[in-house]
Image 1 (cartoon, rainbow, N blue to C red):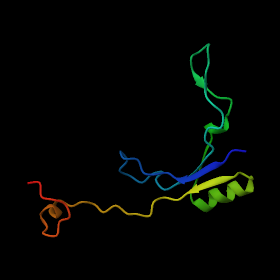
Image 2: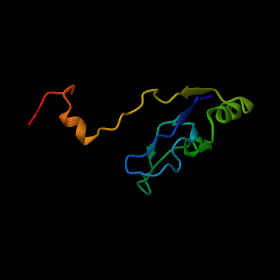
Image 3: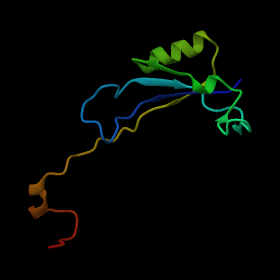
Length: 102
């Protein structure tokens, strides 16, 4: 049986709100190669589980679901770093890290 992937959905770059950011996803991925349908020209696969994406509020809920249904999984934890916003006035501080460009 193929392994599922459990990860936290990142916030989209074009998204200003926090809807759906932070939810955990259980995704099965692609297990069989895709092929072209000669009649329609569409690309398809016999593997229908690759179309399934399950959403959970917490990582533990996703792990419990995978264990309950005997699904092997890989857990991908989000990065621990936090981005520090750049403020305009930091361009003129004396302890600036980057070289002056103006």
